[in-house]
Amino acid sequence: MRFARRRAVGIVAVALVAGLVGSCGTPGTDARTMARVLPADVEFTHPGVLVSEGQLGVVRERVTAGKQPWLKAYLGMRDSKYGAYRYRPEPYTAVDCPAGDRAGHGCVEEREDALAAYTQALLFGITGKQRHAVKAREIMDAWSARMRRHTGENAGLQTGWAGATWARAAEIVRHTPGGGWPADRVRRFETMLRTAYLPGVTKKVPDFNGNWDLVMTDAAIGIAVFLDDHDVFDHALERFRERVPAYFYVEKDGGVPLTPRGSTVDTPQELTAYWFRQSTYKDGVSQETCRNFRHVGYSIAATAHIAETAWHQGVDLYGEVKDRLKAALSFHSRYQAGESAPAWLCGGKVERSMGPDLEVALNHLEGRLDVSVPAAHKLAEETRPGGTDDLFVAWETLTHAGNPGR
Image 1 (tube, rainbow, N blue to C red):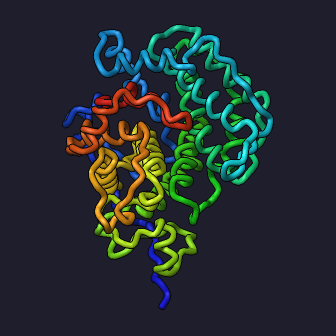
Image 2: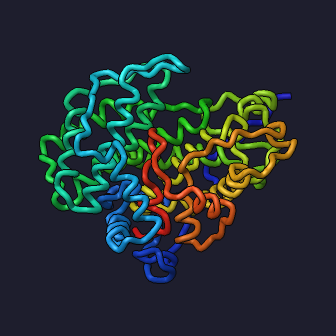
Image 3: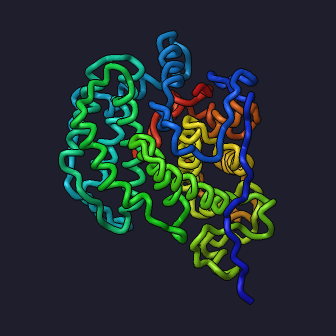
């Protein structure tokens, strides 16, 4: 008998949180209603890709006052290779990223240069020092002058990792007073994002591992905000609503997980294989839990990044997935911290390899919604300050730990 495929479509009604979250994340001080979509006649809020102007202000105040763990996080960022004034970009015209362990061409350089641009942009936003803005512009201008295409089996993933980071860097430099980015260079960077990144991050990948789709959507929504492109933004919302319920399982889904639109996973055997031989489903388990926690961490981070960017634009994606996000954080944090895996979970063996991926999601749940997630809170505290995974997660203890402001 064929397995009845179910879609993650139209799962949640509009989330209305008027009067819940204030301008600094405090309850009851803001009458703003979070919408399900961003109307076409509503302008985007800038800076508003992952980090808002208000959040940068909070970071600035905390670092100046020497508060921990933010000061330690700031110093770690400043003293990293990405924060060096002598950092030199290495742009490529074509970046080729094959699957597996085969050597790529420009893949590491692109990701690291994007992280360096973002690091320098944050340093500029926090300190106001012009030379950080100059360095960020130098890196972004070097790539926009050359980059034309991505190739190889991992091109979609690569454009997701790099594109998400480029958008964050560009947003801060362009929309922070004193950024000094010439209009013609901004336009050239916009062209690069639209031609060399958007085609890759908007491709449908329903049967790829879910971290691909989520990281690609992370890039797409950030690029959409930077480009003021409502169509791309709306498409990112649609993909988020398809993939997140199909990636993080909760028991209300029924006996088996949901699948995204377009999936060809039809039988129970195919579903078990797709979930890395996991056939028992409990609150919080994810499609890649039995692969390793590293990829689950990527997906938690990307999910939160997408929802955070949407939040800054007045769209409450968090409200649609908060139960899944809480369950996933609680579930994986317990085992990441060392709790023994039961026999029903991955045969009793899990790979505890999660990176610095919890801060953005934890900040929303605890700081804005006052939802306790003890296991994730404890794990985050024990591993702070989080640095970077050298892919697309960077400095999130600094930017988001206990920082619910818009």
